Amino acid sequence: MPETRTFRIAAIPADGVGAEVVASGRAVLDALAHGSDGAFAFDWAEFPWGSDYYARTGKMMADDGLEQLKDFDAIYFGAVGWPTVPDHISLWGLRLRICQNFDQWANVRPVHFLPGVTSPLRKADDIELDWVVVRENSEGEYAGLGGRNFSGRGPGGEVAVQSALFTEVGCERIIRFAFDLARTRTRRKVSSVTKSNAQQYGMVLWDDVFARVAADYPDIETESVLVDAMSAKFVLRPEDLSVVVASNLHADILSDLGSALAGSLGLAASANLNPERRFPSMFEPVHGSAPDIAGQGLANPIGAVGSAALMLEHFGLPDQAARLNKAVETVTGAGILTRDVGGTATTDQVTKALIDALNG
Ligand SMILES: NC(=O)c1ccc[n+]([C@@H]2O[C@H](COP(=O)([O-])OP(=O)(O)OC[C@H]3O[C@@H](n4cnc5c(N)ncnc54)[C@H](O)[C@@H]3O)[C@@H](O)[C@H]2O)c1
Image 1 (spheres, rainbow, N blue to C red):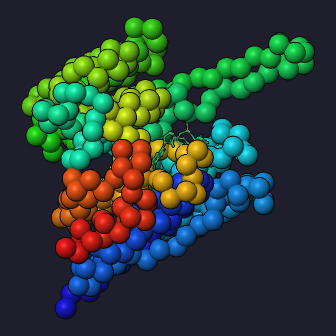
Image 2 (cartoon, rainbow, N blue to C red):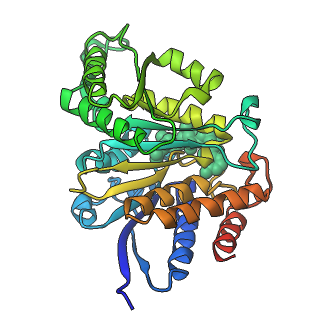
């Protein structure tokens, strides 16, 4: 019998509903491994980092946290942020610290419409909609460059500068990633998003790189759209989208819009990839810690489970990823839905239904 492939995964549930959806995703992945007849297995280590850890230690993660994580095959993340900690501290202290130091420069966020889930878009009823947002995940508006000064001028006198960083290397690698992804899809098209009419340095560099890289992919259709027009297009002409590539901030906002159009933020999956595989990649639902519903069993686990499917693809298990996605479609198609998508099922009930669908 061939040897079992064991994948070592660092789970970081962190805050709020993060704990609930990571527990669900782990249970579903373990059920999948259990049914693989020993072909593969997951070896989990869970890390207690997040806002509670901050309350105890004054830090969002251990000082040597990156060292502890770096040899795992992947990181499975929940969500970070809680009202007791300023959001910029919790985000920079954990999630962005991991993303930036592990050079997870490509953030892949599929916008997927599921059977049984009603979209606020009427056209979703009779047109097949399916696109993916590719987010530059290492620089742009979230490069962390800038500072605050002049508080000594007294109340009302402080000044802050927040700079966006666009490098030719950073633009080129994410744009090439988008084109390569487009080659794997039925609709071979890349839409580039900027605001280069108003932001004439960084985003014009992006446009220039896009035009140069596009010349290497004559088989791929292209368009360049300003972010304001693209937000309208998400609503009015989404059938014209396949791969949408954008800067860190723009793609962050657009992907939330996309998941809302697909029915709920709770459905959206994402992968933070280090494509060179020098560091572990990180898989997480798009949503945050949802303090308004945390701890009540109301969290939709499908974003986290979809992120687990992206992790399986990253491990080179596309058939298993497809099985997981099929189980999700079976469950939503049967109307087993959490409250955010109009149902009454709890997180545990959806999790159990997913496991039953895998075993069925
Ligand atoms: N990747 C991350 O870790 C991440 C992303 C976004 C926000 N945050 C943090 O999360 C905290 C809350 O932020 P927010 O309220 O702006 O965004 P949020 O994504 O936590 O919640 C927005 C809305 O979506 C709902 N929602 C989110 N996830 C859901 C799920 N799985 N099932 C059902 N409904 C769900 C919430 O109930 C809420 O109404 C903040 O501290 C913020 O900084 C973290």
